[in-house]
Figure 1 (cartoon, rainbow, N blue to C red):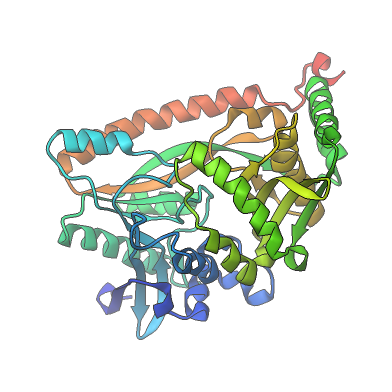
Figure 2: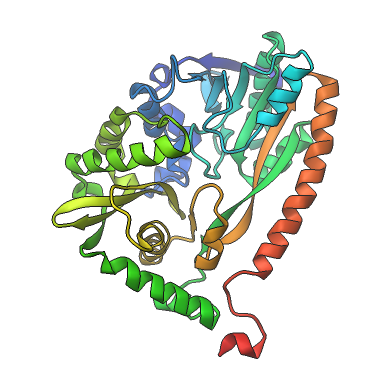
Length: 395
């Protein structure tokens, strides 16, 4: 196929493209009536970020959606943004920015192919089936050309799939490896089946934590679809604000985002809510993919022992087992997740840097970092909670 036949366009808003057209590349798998693999790259999620003011003017996330057309048909798209900072990405390049600007360069703006504020693995180069190679190639070339033409320092594609990472590396992009903690479903029939796979000590600890958590004096419910009500978002907004102000200074999502998501994505969300005396006191919000439950936000107005672990980790496992999901991605960071059955898992991103000398320095850094990440994953996995062959661990 002649690459010259492909037309690459940049859209300033997803309002310029229909949901059906965008989703034909973002989630073609829904043609069978099921869920998208990744709810975050759907037209409805990205548009909710726009319409709520969570991205756009004044946020440092300016939409520059990349699209590729062949004979008038969309064959590939990417959620791309012009960034004036490095907040809300979870693949940290602040040191790169400081080093480059300290040497007299201008790091911002940069181009970010990502889902804002969402450290969840998924396709970043959204390609119509049958156009895999040519579609991704068109998007990569388009992003790099746009950066070069506008003297932008760099292009970054974060939390891409492993297949995209390997393909991007073949195209000349630099591969970066990081790690998160994911829970994997080994065809467990129930939570007790999962516990049976753990060492005795870890199993007892989790049972103790769950008992402590449900002793807070109220009830815990998991709500999705029509069970979600507008008042639930009033409560969750308070939780989200509390967590956001402590972690990021200013919450990334606006209040309006949750109202829009309620209207367009209720079936894509599972809200675990703790209530006491008829009032919500804590909540954890998950998004539901075809194979994965994505844990995203947590917050509370009252602090109770182990309630965070119960709502964020154990109820997520319960939900995944009940729904037959293959895994739970519990978000960024947190080695405390290891003792609760979430194992270290490699994540990937791709990077292009305009300045050749700076690119060479980053490449050396990434090679050393990848080695360190691999060693850390090996060590942490060995310290995981699952039963070993040692007979003492199985007692």
